[in-house]
Length: 226
Image (cartoon, rainbow, N blue to C red):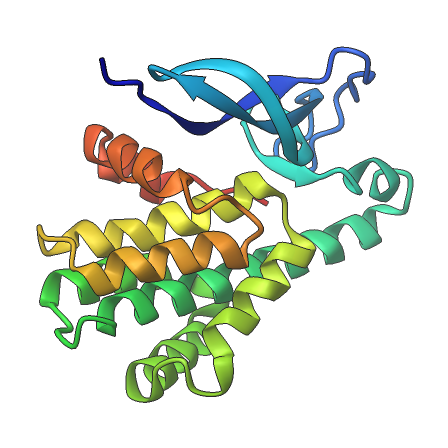
């Protein structure tokens, strides 16, 4: 008899944490609900034993934007400070996104047209920072992970953003991975390195790929997490 076991991450609502009513900085009227990602030991794909908590964050019950738990403190500050923090978080998100997508596209030595199109679509979706993102794209396309620059962007994102936002970055990097219809070993290994760099278990790789292959890619591109 074969025994199939492993781990998987599940999102839970923190019931003892109060809801922050009408506090979402993105849609302005959504309630922020405290959530956590917990890793579970699975037996025959069924969660059996709760393991460590990967991250805690707030998520809007209306627009689904996600925020680091520090948003609770930020909401007590002035609106100007909120806007500045939101702008910075978006820039950190965008830089890590384009860096990881570009790096993923060149890791197998074959920069496909489909991969280039996915990256250009992502940059076009962020017009206010297009020039800076194009510079990052061109630099990494030419020099790769020189001076560990790609992982420096991911480390900055890990320090500034919620795990929900990090997963969104990696999901869009995985869209590039899947763009040419084949997953090379170098791409798989790199995605696992990205997960580790973001403080997420590398075992999430297969779950992430499986979900992406079942999901409408256009919906992934439209998602924006702060």
